Length: 468
Image 1 (cartoon, rainbow, N blue to C red):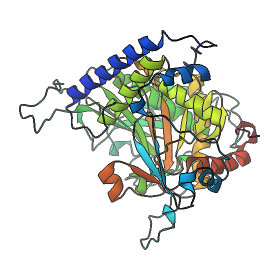
Image 2 (cartoon, rainbow, N blue to C red):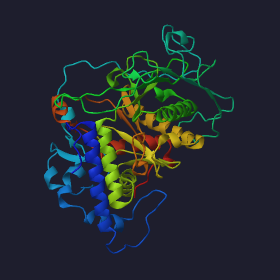
Image 3 (tube, helix red, strand yellow):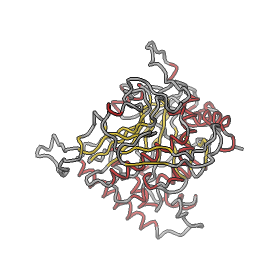
Image 4 (cartoon, rainbow, N blue to C red):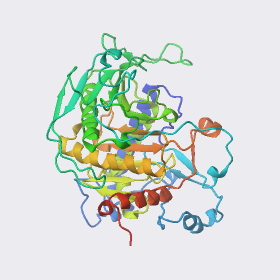
């Protein structure tokens, strides 16, 4: 069994358990290799096994691990999904699905959203057309207010050769030139500054002590140091990235890459998180569009579990778990929204949140920070479209996105596959979710994907997955 995400083990004990899981999987893989060979080689570019190889690999797993139930359904009909399974034979029936990356379960309750609500929600996001140079007096993130923030650690400016179409569905004509530097520069477009209210103590000048158990076994503790930065995504005032030109999204991704590279090279940093909170219900405290990076000496338990599961899967079957999941999603099609420029956007089988979209590469890529400029440019085009779909499907709703890249603490990066999740904040975690660490999702991912595909067809029918 994999370690539970809510385990009370000390970090070092969890590491030992994870290593034991990998050793067991390696022994299992060694036994599996003696089985008769199947037709077709493993695709080493994407590290995906063929269907027959996957079936053979899964057949040698211990039965206690269970099997993965998959759906092959009409993506446009939630009632058909329910009707095809005896245990979902009424429209209010619930069921659960497991995320193979995290090991966590999500309960799907299609009728959950029909309950009454007497409370007034937050005001919606504003999505005016972004115009470069427009600022708001008093906003600390607008150009001209640099003195209200710490000094920049990185700034980027778009060059003159920035030729992109205004049509949301059209392809990019040219990648913009970028002038970037460490520190300040005039006429910036994206600016990275230390957070004035950091979540972790700055690693600069701090002694990184080992994560040894404390003397009191019942109350273990360990120091946490690192860095906390704010990525200001535009010099002009805008609340929602949905109004951005793809060139500005591209420059934001360049900033992510460069800052992840920096922190991954800092001794003692074990985990890096890049995330965006857009709107008060998503956790934002300022209107101006921005994202954040937190680098820590602590490897969170959820990241430990995901790493252990990915490493055990690779040791067992010889391929990346993230890539194998993507291949299965692409084969089933019902949750895939679009493919473009080597990237895929889809609603994961066990989505924890309603309307969640995952973006990842069709090729095996463990680390986001290794992407070159052309790759980031193509990703920016896809991400711009995805944010637009979410904004069109759920106008005015707050949203988060989370970038997952292989943690610096990983000793087996090839077992990992990067991904980015974006999800609107349509409901709130309540008592059951907090007590069980099991989310309740009222929207089936097949239904969410069908809705997004309809929007994407209006956007650009050339890039939407075709069914038939």
